[in-house]
Length: 225
Image (tube, rainbow, N blue to C red; front, side, top):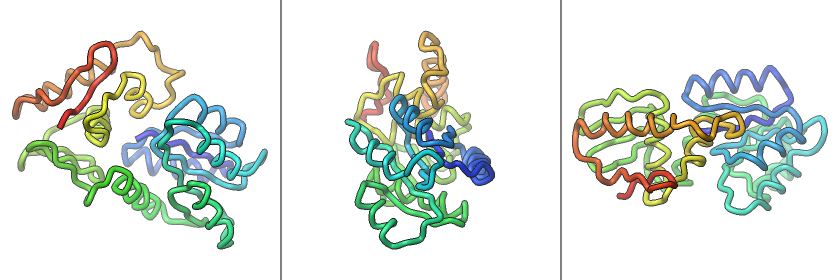
């Protein structure tokens, strides 16, 4: 999943980047309110980790601006040294999904990300069943019945994202944004998304027909289950 870290404390930002990258997340950074606002306006994110005390403004202003954008589902976790109950309440009332006061455990941050993902997609556990396939969003594994399928990191991210958004047509741009990050840095004429999807389909179809994994012509893809 695609994560934007909005944090001006460089050491903490790098710690979160290293930890979450190791867990398979795609990470972008913003150290100021201005930079974060520009990124949020252009890109969609699965998660925004938002510090309130930014050098050029208040994180609450970013949260409010995000919630005023149409058709946005970015989950927001506020990360701040502010421990006051009023700040926590204000953040949640303005639309934040969770709140962690500094210092915090990176493992707790990861657990809260998984909990929000389950809640957001109405999952009862960290496993998603797709026909006879099982996706574990925490361990980042895919099994067909009892046999594990060897997917690359990007193949897993594509499959996971399409399944979390089952029965919805996901455009190539949207898929690229959530799996690779900033769309401005990617050549829109490239067919690398189609190549990854083709390889993913080939691996899945070795076990069973996957006619429910659809290509929607000129738009993108859909897992229709």
